[in-house]
Image (cartoon, rainbow, N blue to C red; front, side, top):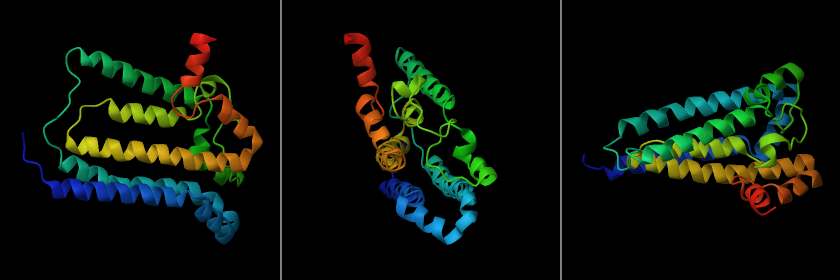
Length: 210
């Protein structure tokens, strides 16, 4: 096995954490409210700007992570390949099912530019959608992302990335929940009580136990 340079992994961790902090800060309520007041009608471009910054700042982190790869410490070989197929299959399923309800134009920022809207909800209906896969979990794309990153072979760098991104996705989900409660109020609180956030344990309990 190749020698492990702790310094490289420390740098990778710091870079990724900084990216997560930047990403969270740019979509936090305080920052978005500030830019709404500052930019006025031009705020409709903010989502596109946010996405561009997120991608451009993630690229050097991804390149550095790739550069410090070592021999895999976990591989999906033999019978474990079945588990990998199931995990990746579920990830694709949740992505596709979620895509039926989310408005990709809103996610990218095109809808905001065309319509001048700044709604938090990204559902195609523009309102709180609780149908389909959203009856199982409240955030299918976040769960799909977690499944996707863990369904690959892993070396030390990949493990670091996975742990930090998983923690970030969980924290990010809670932060997004606050925004959704602010937008939909009691309607969303009732939804939270009925449907699980990431793991569909309430849905499974209802289907199995009734």
